[in-house]
Amino acid sequence: MVQKWTDVVFLHWRVPPAEVQSLLPEGIRVDTYEGDAWVGLVPFGMQGLGLPGVGALPLVNRFPEVNVRTYVRHNDRRGVWFFSLDVDSLLPTLVARAAYSLPYCSGEATHLRTGEVVTSSVKRSWPRDGKVAGPRADIAVRTGEPMDVSDPLSRFLTGRWGLLSTSRRGVLRWAPVEHPTWPLYSADLLHLEENLLAAAGIERPADAPHAMLSPGVPVRVGRPSRA
Image 1: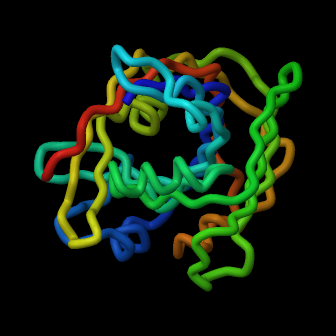
Image 2: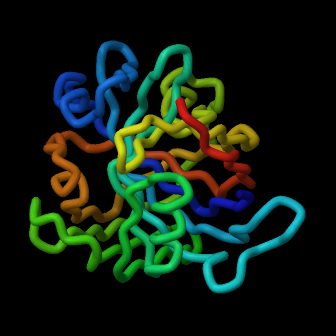
C-alpha cells in the first residue's frame, strides 16, 4: 500500500517493560530505550491510501486515525506493535483487519490543523470489548520548534521500518514500512482526555508525555508475510 501520513502527533510515555510484555504474544519482545518500554498515542491524517502504480482507492483513501502502539523485537527485526487503530469508517477497518491482521476499530473521528494547533478526537463504536466504557480520546497540541532528527530517543520512537501483527490463528506476520526521515517539531500539549490506553490494558503514567509533531511523510507499506 502507498499513503501519506499528515500532521502526525507523537505522544509517548515511559512504561515498565514487564507491563507491556504481558500484553504481547509469544515470540514478541518489548523493545526498550534506557531500560524503559514506551507506549505511544499517535493521531494523524491518512491521505492517498492506494496501491503502487494504481492510485488512491475509492471511498477509503482519506480518513483520520488515532493509534495506540509500542515498540518490539522479533529475532533480528525491530518494529511497531499496534494495540488499536481507530478510524471513522467501517470499510477501512474491515480491509485492514483482513489484509494486515491489525486491530483497527471504527467510530467517530476527526483530525484537524488550525494554524499551529492540531486537534484530534475519536469515539469508538466497534468493536466493543468491555475493558472500558466508551473508548475515546480528545487531544490538542501546538507546534513548537524544529527538533534534531538525529536525537537517539526521537529515532527510537519514530525510526521504525516495519510492523508486526498476529493473525486470528496466532501466526506472527511482518510487513516492511518505508518512508523518509520524519521532519520533527517539539509540541506543547494543550489538552488530553483519553481512555484508549486503558482499553488496551495499559495504565497511563501520570507524568506528562514526551510530545512531538511532524507535518508528515509519504509511506509505503509492503506485503505482509509470516514473520
